[in-house]
Length: 227
Image 1 (tube, rainbow, N blue to C red):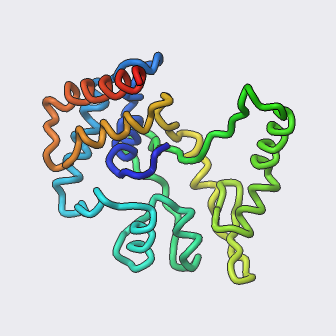
Image 2 (image 1 turned 90 degrees about the horizontal axis):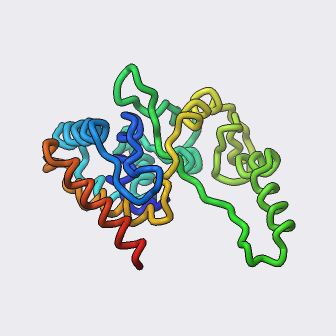
Image 3 (image 1 turned 30 degrees about the horizontal axis):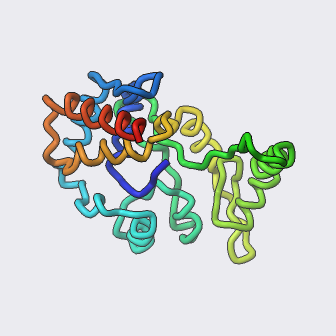
């Protein structure tokens, strides 16, 4: 999933929480409706409130981490960055917010795809490597020796000291209910189209937003398919 922007992934997570996947099962056409309109309305309300930080449009992983570490941000979604650079006693983990009390949060899940080329001469060995990367032992190694805290881990080792942090009970339900990145090979193009359509968030017109999203998403899907 492209992580260079803020608006696209945020809107996709909100739309998913309302029940919209934004593109149809064929991955050839936009699929918008009342759910996407509700997500856009919520995003517009947030953007026109006093809580909205207009610098979020240009936010990156590095700037977000710095603002959080300096006390200039109330929260940070990329928990790995926070636990990797902050003292454990100074931070706490909270569940991703719901769009309303009767719906589970559907945060977009990050990560990478591991695939084996059909042209590879070492497919069996490649599969074994991927199984090793995904193994519990490897996850524990990353959790303890690196700055990555996985849902399976409940401790953080830093400067030779281990601090217990209850991650599992909070993270596992979010991962179970999480939203996969847009199910299309051209997800980056769709994400960029959504961002362009909704920016600036303060100017979202809820009455026409579905028509605009349909046009921009369809254009992104069709243009990239042709090229």
